[in-house]
Length: 424
Image 1 (tube, one colour):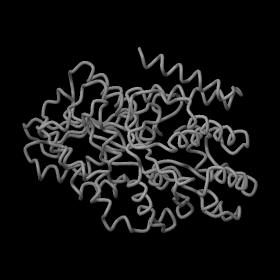
Image 2 (cartoon, one colour):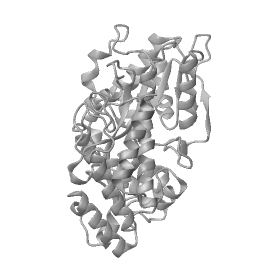
Image 3 (cartoon, one colour):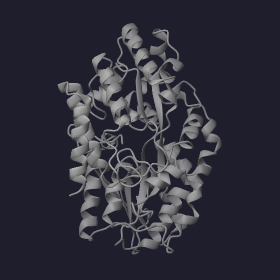
Image 4 (cartoon, helix red, strand yellow):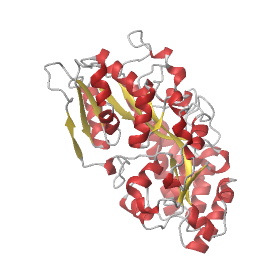
């Protein structure tokens, strides 16, 4: 997954959007009623704030209170409260990369239980997003509220200067790298901020429903197979050709590369277009475009979820809040307008807003592309050791590109390390 709040100096995308600790805001009404407490993080907390007026009208006796911490602090705090069982909020917002860990802990409600009846609603959501919210035992512990269809964002002006077309980038992975060489020669811009981006997306090539990135259907470790070998080979090719800036995602150097126009493409969730518009490179409006990922790959980058802790004080109100945020079409569309968050609700994806031109993307009707991608992403489950495997594989790749370690050797050691640590 694309966000990394634990690897210094990398910063998670939402951490960059807010001060280290955002103050909580209570419900608009001063009442003696027990509030519904939502624990969230920037920028997702803005979705709840935008929906508060509708919540007040629907639930006049239950004030909404949102407690927001930065991305890393929020997930660390939620891990702590689930471990101790005390001080739990009614609703807990979670980023995709933490779902596997939290689901395995057993501290979240199963939303398929009769008290919630979420099973009757799941056909309103993309299959892949529902699969991401399940525990290894099949419980639905987290409900998706926004999703991240994967896309290739690129600088149209730089492609024109290099005499290239979009198809030169998207037809195949070797063609993508060849186009990067031409871009570098003609414009001086790098193809990617970091070769690791190519590694990460190539790890998703060929995945089928029920198969994870690092772990198979039966929990077997997949690290080191042909998919990993290919991802490492092409990532190394990008580094050796000098086509990346060696600037890991969400670092200051990464952000500066966009502002300074030193990078031509970025593969990530479609939500990145909103970040480019709002804070990464607002002055480049009209220069960027969105395209499918190279080689026909469809993938998901990130996503936000809501969960109910086992010891939440007000579970009935918590479920009412989740239903409003996830299954109310108007609320989902409001989040799209406020946050550029792509809606999980399928009926919201069918709204006319999907056909609106996006000025930042040169008037491109890119949401239609993103919707098509979202409906073809395989249902890839999360695993409790995904974070562990991600860290191990990233370290192995760094040994390959920085220390010239042979790929088979690095992957063999990575596989053994994942197996050993997962058994603890």
